[in-house]
Length: 355
Image 1: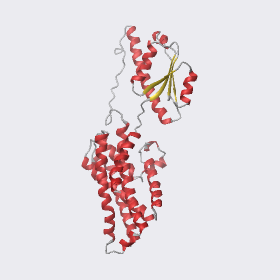
Image 2 (image 1 turned 180 degrees about the horizontal axis):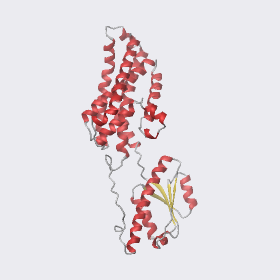
Image 3 (image 1 turned 45 degrees about the vertical axis):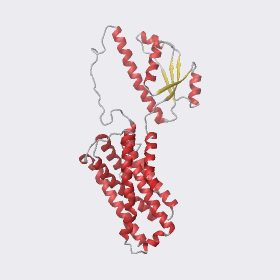
Image 4 (image 1 turned 135 degrees about the vertical axis):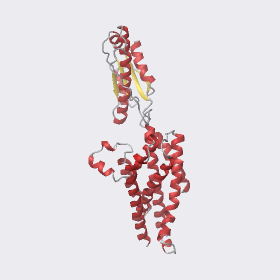
């Protein structure tokens, strides 16, 4: 049990850290280049150079493109028609076609974004070449210059956004499940009734159950933090001490949930089902994957009662932005209220059960 409690969070973070990335690479692509000119080859090479697309198939008919996408062997088909290069050299608009497998809407949206960016870059390059042939300079005709800077995550790596979220999810899962399973298991074996008749006071029995798991949970925070920063290279720009302090407050919520579930469950199967009932809303409504701002207003109101929501915001602020208490306080005080309320209510129910 101790081995699982310590090393399971590390394994979960490593596995989920790679799986949860929304960046898509090695997109299987089928090419139908009917033009076969230097222009078409240059255009297609820009897709290959992006690092997102793998040119796995070359065909000469649209039926072959259709078959490869239907079979799931290709996610994207690029069709370059005859006359593509002639239109570019003749200062005309050249048309090309991208056929995307839209069965997975999220993947298709990301691929479409990649294509739009590559197409925009190619348009600028060909336009500059056209102006130079006409004796003009692209710089002299530029009406304005927009300088874009991306703060906090300049490389736009989704893993930098997702790993702190997995950090929080793993801590909630471990603190809640370990506490629940331990207490319910003792109830099934009758050990809890034996402890209830000993000279131990209720608060001593409660502390005896919570303190060991709190220690293990803090050890998990340290280990998961090391994996996130060293293994995944997630930047830690904020205070590590503040991370552990706020992590302890969040753990109070997880431990409280564990005790609460154990008091209302008679068997480990009931406890597991109840835990899943708690975890699913936390996972979906916390902003782990889906932005809360995109949810309907009534759902946004429900998310206010999800403690994981506040800790996710805290972790992302600490890791990526390096902000302090001044900016984190709107998320800290609800977390404190949830932690104290949940732990206090659970302890009262636990004392009533063993009293």
